[in-house]
Amino acid sequence: MNPNLISEFLKPLLFIGILFFVVVVLYGYFENEEYDEDDTVTITFRCNDVLAARDNYPSFVVNECVKLRNHET
Image 1 (spheres, rainbow, N blue to C red):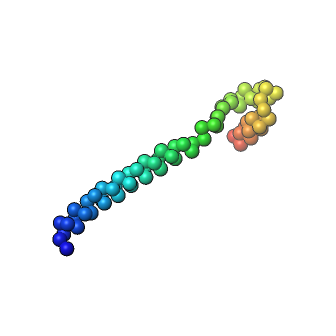
Image 2: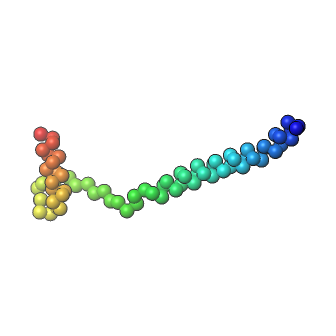
């Protein structure tokens, strides 16, 4: 069998394989982005304000500030 004939046969297969690999990698990257938790919210409270007006904040926020204050001392 002629080596040139084999190489001419493998060139398109190599191109298709590389193209498939690039498409799979890009698909994986972009699909991974969709799984971010877009429905979450982070709110920051100053513990000085929370502890000064405990009735104005939910109990879990007050408890976390108390834990932070106890941990600092």
